Amino acid sequence: MQTTFTLNPFDLPKRWYNVLPDLPTPLDPPLHPGTREPLEPEALSGLFARECVRQEMSSDRWIDIPAPVLEAYRRWRPTPLVRAVHLERALETPAHIYFKYEGASPTGSHKTNTAVPQAYYNKLDGTRALATETGAGQWGSALSFACQLFGMDCTVFMVRSSFDQKPYRKAMMKLFGARVHASPSTETQAGRDALARDPETSGSLGLAISEAVEAALSGQGTKYSLGSVLNHVLLHQTVIGLEAELQMQEAGEAPDEIIACVGGGSNFGGLVLPFYRAARESRRPTRFVAVEPSVCPSLTKGEFRYDFGDMAKTTPLLRMHTLGHDYMPPPIHAGGLRYHGMAPIVSRLVADGVVEPVAYDQLCVFESAVLFARAEGIVPAPETAHAVHAAIESARECARAGTQKTILIGFSGHGHFDMGAYAAYLSGELENARTSAVQAGGPLAGARLYC
Image 1 (spheres, rainbow, N blue to C red):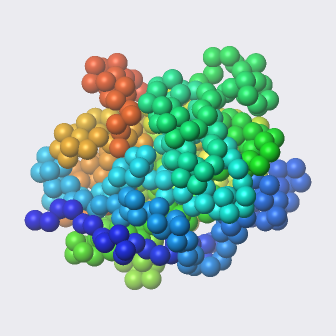
Image 2 (image 1 turned 90 degrees about the horizontal axis):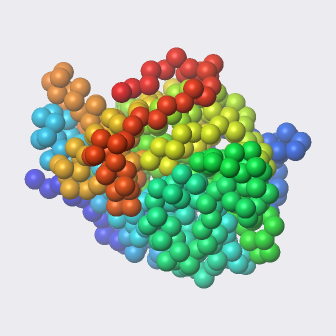
């Protein structure tokens, strides 16, 4: 039985897929943080590369991937699609389980797919340095790599909880020449204000974004780069789903369920959006499942409304599912999922009933991650483990019901730099985080938080 499906590097997708023309309901426009009026594209040019701004607002269904970006992609793309036959046997399930393995990238996650084009477009604009934030460190690692690739400086504000938990992510960023600060830091006014309020704070992505935006606006020749949430970021990630479509055809199957973790939405959107287009055109029923942590459940407990992307309220307001821009989640090990908001595209698809969100606690997620690692020999990142757990639960239901389905997992990255979390779980020291600060009253406020 063939279990791994690859493509020729020169069969890489040459275009990204832009879902905006195909959404069932158009997105609401971003609003200016000062006036609350719809934002003109020029207002974003102070932060982002011109081509990224154009792509953010584009109505073109297909956007060409530049040759230098394709050349960089070929260092690791196409990534493999793997049939998880050993996991199927361990679960004694009739389900067929596949995973699209993005851990093959230079820094071990899907984030490099957008880091490279963002750095490239900024280089074309004459930008000398990029500033950004990172949760668990995957995005910071990816942008550090991309900046080094195009000869640019990089400054990363890393959420303090992950800064303390993941020393080797810091080392990787520094290896590629980046400067890394624990957020909140004393480098920015936003950071100093946060430390004055709570010197022991574990930080949040919303706060780290505030610091990175401030650093970009105050630094000469510096711009800001974001690793999730925005339309152009999800656009770049569709290379994942476009490859997976071809690989599933090679496998002779079509997924009944596509499951991926969500923090800001880029990994989920990258895999799901091309399949959403195909399902829409063929009218083939496909279940799209977005998996988040129970302590940062923007989709299952948040409100669908306009909110800021950062704590200091400097970013444009986006209509999205949000827990509030000042929400401070507990320091779980899935640091990349600790964001208060969600990509407007993903939020819109949830609101329209296309995407089904679920949330899980940390302990059951790690239990499934260990099962997957022992069966398949690949250690999932804690973020990825959320999708793995949801897929395992679905496959177990197939075993109970005696029904067969094909499940595709978005395997966003490996967990080689997360062994501290696994050590804590295996020793019995890991606990489920708890919070009483999750807002109630959102459209899915009564949703069950599983496990």
